[in-house]
Amino acid sequence: MMPRQIWKRITLGAGVGFVYVALLVTTASYLCAQEKPAANPAQPADSSQPAQRDYRFEVASIRPVDGTHRTRPHFDPGLYREEQAPLGGLVGEAFGIKRGYEIKTLSWMDTEYFTINATPPEGATNADVPIMLRHLLEDRFALKYHHETRQMSGYELVVVKSGLGLTKSPLPASQRPTVTGPPIEIGKDGMPHLSKDAGSNELRIGANAEWRGRNETMKQMADQLVNKLGAPVMDATGLEGEYDFTLLYTPEAVRVFSLPSSPATPNPTAGGDEASAPMEHPLLRDALREQLGLELKPVKNISFDVVIIDSANKVPTEN
Image (cartoon, rainbow, N blue to C red; front, top):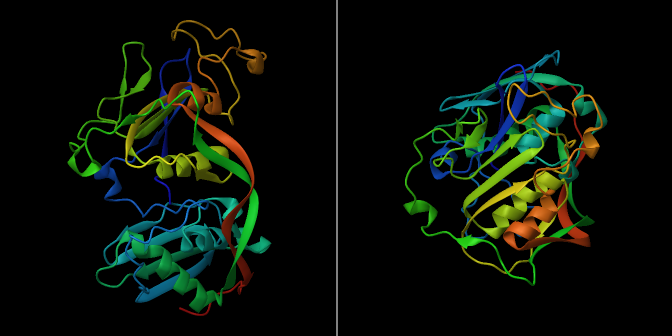
């Protein structure tokens, strides 16, 4: 799965209110504790990657619960726990799926909740959880599924004729200094900014976003664009190697509004017509073209794999 977004709520004073900050951390030191990234549905599997190990939980307890508050999955050597998770969400985790169009579950799966406590085998890591969870669902819920190749409209990421605005990474990721500082810092303007040690991150404040990439391949960029656009994106740049970039843009999925110039200055557009307020940065697609020399070219009939859930039991077999 893609590297995760971590949302923080920071209070910067009554005038500004709450500011939402999204950090997409992909530095090498951080990735050591993360799950294996999911494959881009528009990209073929990388044959150079080692095959997934076929582990199973040694012991597992599955208990039906009321779905009131789901927690993040917890993995330690010798322990896996997930609380109040919908069965549909567990199925998505079992196949490493983070995008809705990549899986078709049964409608009732989103209203049946379970808590799982399981013991992984010796040597298993967090990257082995999907296959262990898949075996668990097959054994305890009699989960049946198949794969289909489907097509939908999406984008090709291409280089514009005016030229590329990316910079080749000066050092491979393995030789970059380990990030030790915080990914964000509060600037003199009282607002959060990406720090020099932020590595690959994304920072969002209101309708403004700063996306920084370090040692990113074009396939990695395309995969991150899938999450931003909610549609398949295929790397068609023909560019090899790793690149560094910084992109300032306005996310296309947010309502555009103006932040006050200082905490003491009221927002003249607050409560008014936010859609008519001027944007500080261009929309994502325009920013890619203007700042990085890349373009999202609409295309039809991009093929991708879909997991189709055929059947499953609502009640698991006994522990």
